Amino acid sequence: QVRLVESGGGSVQPGGSLRLSCVVSVDSGSSTGCMGWFRQVPGKEREGVAGIDVDGSTSYADSVKGRFAISKDNASNTLSLQMNNLKPEDTAMYYCTARPPRPSPPRGLCYIATINYLYRGQGTQVTVSS
Image (tube, rainbow, N blue to C red; front, side, top):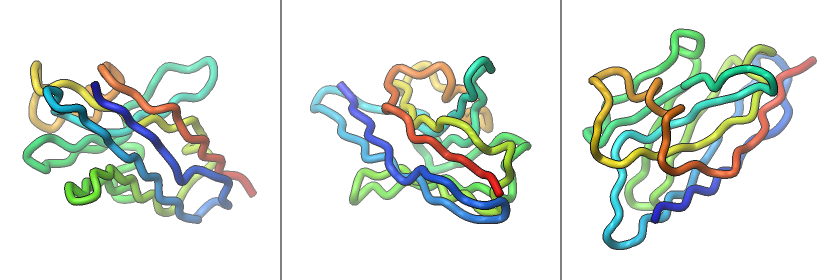
């Protein structure tokens, strides 16, 4: 079993920054592969935002590339998403997700695979508004 607990959402003005964190707890006998974040607005489909593979390689949706950065601290078992230059269209519920090691998504597509997760956190709301 894998448990994911997010924090760090909130309200910010356009151009501002937020950092989302996801504490990952993995029971013995379980393991994770591609991990990342997707976001969802009510009535719309999930959008994969950022992903990080087991080898540390990262991938991003075009809509956030250059503004968001995903990282993983193995010492604290924390997955983070640094979001800079936020825009109103970034407003959504953000979810931290984890997939099993197999099947692994094609290289560079982990961020898309986040929407087809095995494990998901409870979500954290991000609101960007003036």
